[in-house]
Image 1 (cartoon, helix red, strand yellow):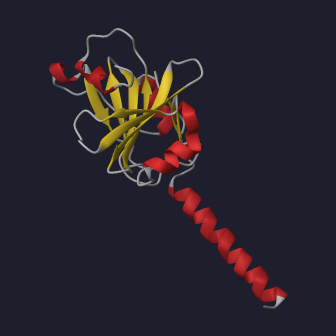
Image 2: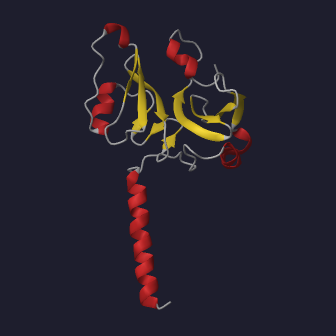
Image 3: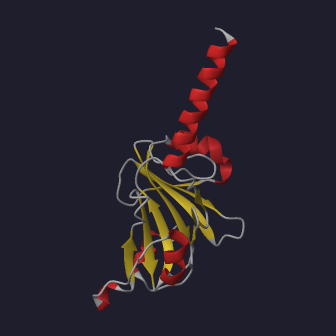
Length: 175
């Protein structure tokens, strides 16, 4: 291979890599959020941060807990509870965690990456599934993976709450 061909190939790979990383717009899942969104933000904080126009549902009984989806990230959903971002769900590949784990990865790979700090529990609804949970150092936030037959179905960044009456909190880790 000539050096000119090698340079062209390297340039092509750099352009390809840049295109792939821009597909996620740099968003990664952290224990306290995703992209520029942070757990605990209000709708009025999320809208300018994400350049969105999220609004409370009109139905009063739906205002306590509802979902919104960012337009540029259709595979990401934000659970808004009592007016604040309480959970971020990712339902398909393309938005990895900071450590690189994403929907579609194997449970074994997540265990290798996160090591002994990753807590494994049986899934409540999927017989061959598990919850894999990693908590932040201050124990306030976490990432939960849901698996079925050894492969990841979804990723969640969540706020841990120890005492709450909301039905939505049944999906938080450690409860």
